[in-house]
Length: 395
Image 1: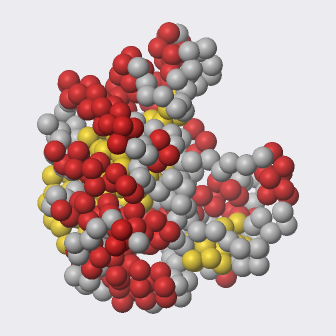
Image 2: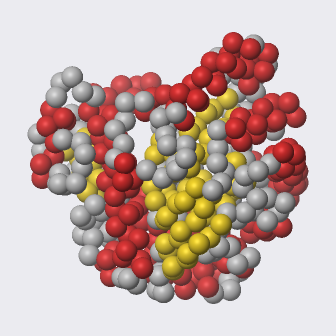
């Protein structure tokens, strides 16, 4: 039986899936909506605004290769120095957080088409447990493509059964279940977690924008509602795409922050790397239009600007000074990432009051970069989730 999250207050919007929650995870308070902060070695120079702190993500990717390559789980299991190095890295990252107040989650993905054997699986789960306040199940690569039949789904649930059994051996923390974007089996996955009394979920957008997956999200949220978990659970998301620029546009509507309106309590990071041939990345790096991409919470747009143009949208509440972007000694990409994390975090805090006042849809309609069709989809989602539907009728 999984340990439970404590819900102290739940305040849903009457007309949409926007919701605020006050909850405790492993004894630590968290108020939603919220934006998680991404802790990693590559992000060690990020500037974090104290106002936005609350939940932190760590992410590690391992291989199941037995040839003891650099990121092989077996190299960590067999070579004590490599285990020491891993723990030193994770301890260094978590020491940057306020471990008395902030919630840490270590996601671990393994890069292999087969399920791990028991020893590497125990290592994955023990490591995730050690550095998390709520223990996530493993991230499995290409899962939507793999569980494409009843037989493959049974293999997946057997893997989940084994994973939960390992965690529950000595468990004092809640478990957070991974929900892949596998439309056909989402109701069964939610049913499986509900029977295990799990009340926290991570939905993996798999690099897609939230509103491009409406049928899948509708099925997920409706399945939660059928188990009385839509509001009585913590719903996190990872790997959402922000929204794609076309060649001629200097602003695009922010798609990631709209996931709050689809029922998500917390927006995580996009951990999936951009893939493509070497020539593609060289071309991307050298493109003249490859400018900064900054989030503007005033209108929910991502703006493509040079450092000398950012005064057009720069807010007064950022801890990052505007002239930092023209400082040749500073990494503008780190500044960009810090700025966007901060501004989305600050907007999520503002949304809490908007939702409590039952003004969520009115507020969303005031954002100039939110397309009318996207607004309508969010406004319609609550009705769709409440309505009994078959899989085919949701298309």
